[in-house]
Image (tube, rainbow, N blue to C red):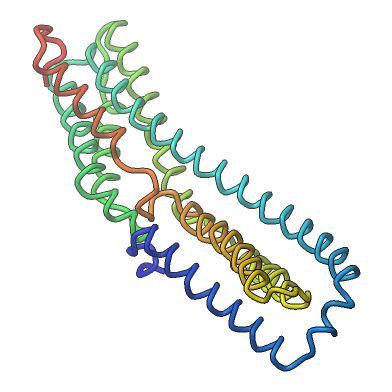
Amino acid sequence: MTLLYSTPSILLLAIAIVVVVAGACGGQIYIHRHFRSADFVQHNEVGGFIISVVGTLYAVMLGFLTVVVWQQFADARQSVALESAAAADAWHTSVGLPAMARTKIRKDILDYADDMVDREWAEMRSGEFDKQADVFVMDAFAIAGGLIPVNQGEANAQAATVQQLSVLHDYRQRRLASNRSGLPWFEWLVLFIGAVCVICFCWLFGVENKRTHLLMTAVVTTLIVSMLVLLFELQYPFRSDIGIGPEIWTGTLEHIKFMQMGGQMQMKM
């Protein structure tokens, strides 16, 4: 699995298409060499009706799973955006805390954002995560939660900061969960069985021009393989090279550093 996801998506797609199309066309040539063409031609009408039913059922199943996976991918992208926004918000809401607590919390947030860009995203490519990021979050929680406010302003800042840290923690867990919850093996098995049935059905027709028949089979096979590779690449949103990158966190880092370079002293560490 790790080897497949380390392969560039376009290369994986090209290899899959070449291998499967070669096998499909080879199987068709073998079948038609061992049976008379007339045996296929006389069943074209019935075969056409059956393949329309089989193809429709497979298209519905493939389309449904594609929509489900794409929705999960979109949800994962939104989780990253909300997680990074919560980190930036915690940075801002800590402005009302005492200087020492504010400095420590903001350092944890900055270290967390750096960890996302430098380490965690690389770990997620193999389905893992960086445990040090949890340390940064828990340390910020401990500082904010253990603070004893001396006035209403500090109490408000404490409540807001803890709330944003909670949001950050929750969306981090969602992000990590989405990177471990791909399609179950049984669904992949059903997809492969359906693909084999549709492709093999293409062999059972009789066409006068054999090259045209091979081209038709190749087109059907290419479409099915392309959709399966797309599902494979999207099922784990952070593992493939077309997955979700750390660009959102890079933007958060730039925002925080811009705040630090500004003229407002309360935005400093």
